[in-house]
Image 1 (tube, rainbow, N blue to C red):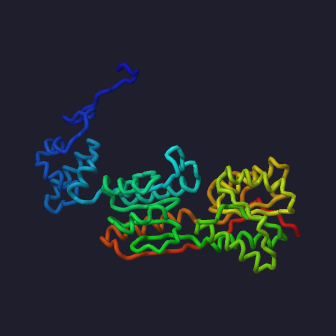
Image 2: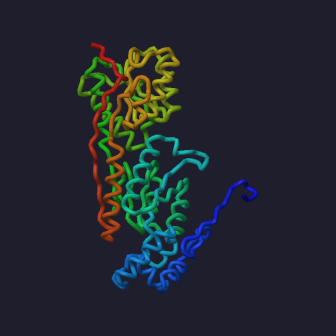
Length: 358
């Protein structure tokens, strides 16, 4: 037992001490071959090695738990099997992983990359220079720009698209990138129409959509549904709160005290909808008896609220899977030129947070 209180038990297998980091030379010495032969087997160049020798080397690698040095391999092969995931933040004090949409997306991305033999490197950025530094210092096979504020950094990728690149939900027309969108306008159209079909005509919209094309598309879906149903658009029913829990909490409280007859709310994120529900409750309203609420994203947390939250599903899992599939296809084909844009459908998932007035 050492001074830290841990008990270390040295283990040896057939002449190799597992307490020490196994090296390429250790494998070569144990197999009785050159380091180049071991390297050829590790890097998939087994045609240069007899099958008997390759099997022997692979057995020793497995026995020793040897893990190749990816950094060293990338210097010689020009590939790293690493995908960089860039997450933009306003400040480095901000913890974006608390956002359930981001954490859900990251979970699916990491799982899909692992299944395909790739590693994920996550990097937060606040300035365009952060992106430049990342691209300059790290050898990655592809880039995923997760969320949000891609427009701030787009120039860096337009000028120097050094590898295949994925963006989510950007409405910029940028050559050479893979862009995965959801039908944002349809999403809020569906949620607003759902409210109207259940007798609601005083429907609020919560999100600071101005200067944000994605949220603007969702706002336009809200307006389109009102117009088609003959319901006048009322600017006072638009609350320009950030679609976060705190923004939703403030909006819910405001709606409770507005005395404007609002009976329903649609918004652009589940976490905002949950804040609205809590703010309304604190203001004395009951959901859905006094106020019906619909979220957006259909994250797993919708099933754990009281009442369970009705939401627009943009199928986050399929969105991430599609991005990974197209990115890896570009990497394997060595094609970094052709643009690709896919818009995925959305649907409403009905739960308990809306009541019919009929």
